[in-house]
Image (cartoon, rainbow, N blue to C red; front, side, top):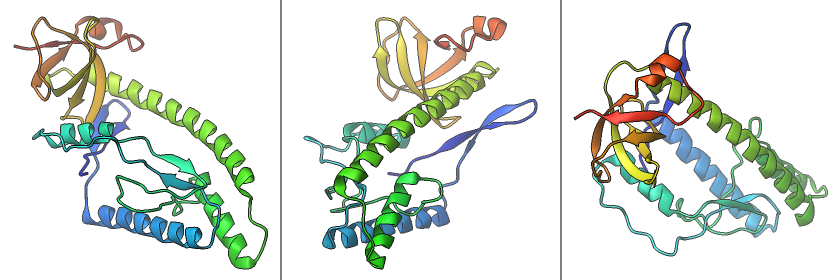
Length: 238
């Protein structure tokens, strides 16, 4: 998938969204990391080394969505896939198209990678490896902690995305992805000027189709109250 990433940048008196360049060098690094993960996974599998393999099962049905807008097509593809999971038993990774895989290239910033390094070094040095049950216990603790950390980071990101939308004084362009809750008007949109998806409360009496381009403005009370805690209300400009 070709995905457009963005990040929120905070300045002294300004907040903005910056797109991350999809460069050849970035792609080379990503592919090199996948290659190394594949090599280490296959080596560990052949030598019966217990490591935290990252696996992904094949979905029961999978068809490429017929959507012309790249970001919306990527969203549909990703959401049709099953979640990846970590196991000490090697299994295929469907979206990467490989028979086994492990994340191992970032042991400084990712603890789970360090476990793989520990197991490999112990094997090569002839030392005792962590047994399956020991590795599983550590993995369970890691996953619990990383879920909590990820949720905090997501909440922080959503908070600043919301502030960015509230402080925008111009008309905001967004593609409609889907209704989260039609009854109360919660909708998921892709704000392509900023490069991120966000759930808003959409004020409209009209029917909306998937991938429809909407021109939006933030409901006026947010400018007055700067209410950052409740759902962000936006209305469509005809």
